[in-house]
Image (cartoon, rainbow, N blue to C red):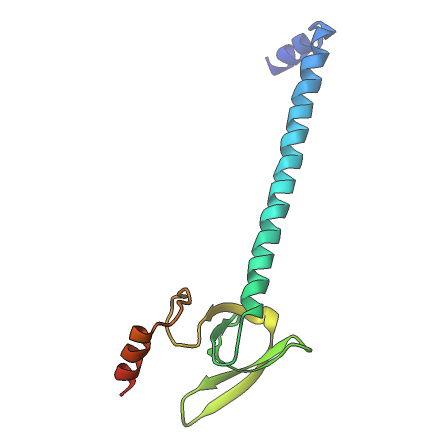
Length: 133
């Protein structure tokens, strides 16, 4: 039965070549568009990741791709590395990592969420000094 359908397909008139070329062109444009879109989105993700790594400073909390958690002790931009401080107050360890090993970051103030920096006012400065006393 399948062979009969295929044999009948060969007997169709050859006037539909334009439709075939249009469909192939549409598929080619969609395929190229998909590659361009993926390339642009990957560049955006890489740029955002690079900005995150560049914004790191000593004291920030970091989790590496290996699962090691700790605080940044030292940053060496020339070698593109950082030293991670892990352990407890009595027993601390220092491990040197490449910046590409960073999986997650958190700000140095110990909070999990990143907040926008607000301009300090006199009232807020007084509240902070009262909280620290």
